[in-house]
Length: 531
Image 1 (cartoon, rainbow, N blue to C red):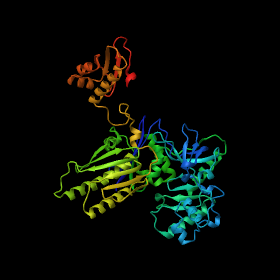
Image 2: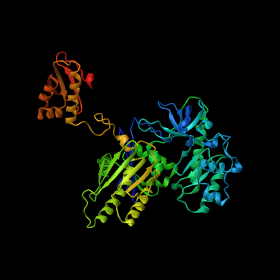
Image 3: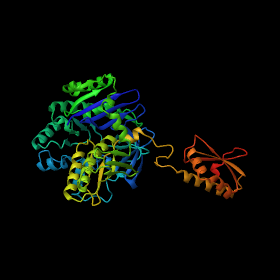
Image 4: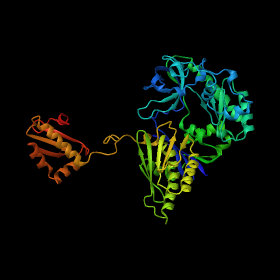
């Protein structure tokens, strides 16, 4: 698969696009007034603890307090709860190495705790782990989305290109894509020997095919960075930012520029030099794949990315076969409906449905990455009768989701043709970044029809009649409502029913769903009186 990374920078935006076979599949954007927080580390103070939801709110110096759930607290840092050295898994034990060493530390502790009788008071309850007023270090786990606060964790980690340093853990993790048990075991031992006591790490997939000395050198830099963070944390008491995650350019190169990427293209000299500078430190052999784009045609236009981005904001996405997808976002989940549309290419209905569903699966996997959709997703595929077709669709969907760097999982098809998915959400999606709520419908997506507005005016007049309305009123409406009232001769009917003289006028500043009513004598607005 041919992969490319494109970087486009202007005065208003910095953008990164990932292309697979010249089709955009992932997209990042950073604007001057954006506050990218994911991965940032803060010194915070526990403001209040809410035992009923096993959560706390942490003051990190921002307008909104951050949200901390009990599952995101590193219990190993609590002396009364932390496992003793004898209880930790042994590196030489085959059972521990294969079954436990890759588990999160809290899972190990929960397994060990089952062997002993727990006290009546749960030591893992949040009110027993932290207390109000306590100073703690937290890392941004999820950026604020909408009205929600940022989500944080005390499980601090520092990401590098080849590895991730986990300062408060003894575990050494190796990417699961390495199935060589002996190599994993040897690498774990060598990493344990070079890391300071009490620190752990995770070797990323990109670090499996490089010289191990590069991993060691990177971990030394990450350890030094962690020591600087700890030093800053001791220099005051007020909540503040201690560590800022790398910018969008460096972060994209760090996380996405692997050996699979054939070319990196940047249309800005400063961005190009930043990429070259970073690669010179971590992967000099990749510098020859980076190109500075200088042509007059905009870089994203050259690869038709702008058109794809515009389509990604639409609710309806057409498929090449003639079918289409319909995206419907609710507060709780995203629903995707698959429709055959104009597709009638196959003689057999089952074959037609199978063709559309398979194409839809491919496009859905792409749209999830491109739109950066998170949370619960429910896909309504077209019903198929053959079991082998259903099984083939499930297998295809899982294969496509493996290409997603964000944690994603899906269920089997239900008897109704529904497939449930979850995708980790850590930042606002493309829809939140590029659009805002419509001021006319307030995000509802629909407005009152002309006949409904006319009925609302009728009810207003009915209420006003009981309040001795003046003998004549002026009503301002939109042109569409004015035309509807005129076309249906409603003015005469309303005057007769409510015993009042009405003067309808068109107001260009009013939307279709709006109207304003004034007293004709004093020109005083009285709309709110009888709504």
